[in-house]
Length: 259
Image (cartoon, rainbow, N blue to C red; front, top):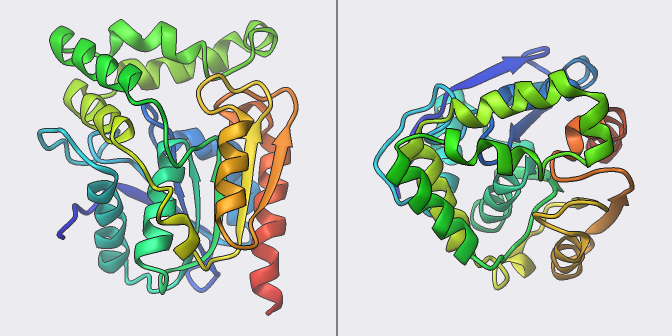
């Protein structure tokens, strides 16, 4: 399986332990900016744009999680990354589960945020059809961004909400639809037992897209995985609970440095 080399940005010392960060459907690598400064002081942080998102290539869909996982492998090969930790949120977490199960030699430690191994795919298939028909992601931007933050937090941070809405609206329609179809078809439940990387699962207590029950199912199925449920966090928990997420990622990765 051949993958695409994805647009990426690296920060931190070149000889520091590496950390791949892959984000949510409808975002760019900029969604990780709240974690960039605290993590890049200790790790080589490599943020990726999903296929069809940001500045990455936009092939015709549909895509699968295996396609998106192959993109991560191809990008790591291009960068010369043979061993790395991985942090993924939402579809980024799904990709991380696939990579950790199918390329265990690559993934040292794994952080999965606001994600699921299996969802009711009908809503995502419908969303893909709507976006393709309209030719723009603008038609879903308002509905999607409302799921990313709790209403009270969104009311207090309108500029942050608007910034992320613009990420959705700026995503190429075919790339967004293709990734929606990847989510619609995902079922990683049979692969979770093969993940050997120490895994931290983080769920937002108020996440309507991937409620904590999904995080619990993932943590229960991955050997030795731990689950934390964050209060006052919806889907983009890394934005709403920026400091807490950065601390949890660093703490989980610190165990690697101590080995």
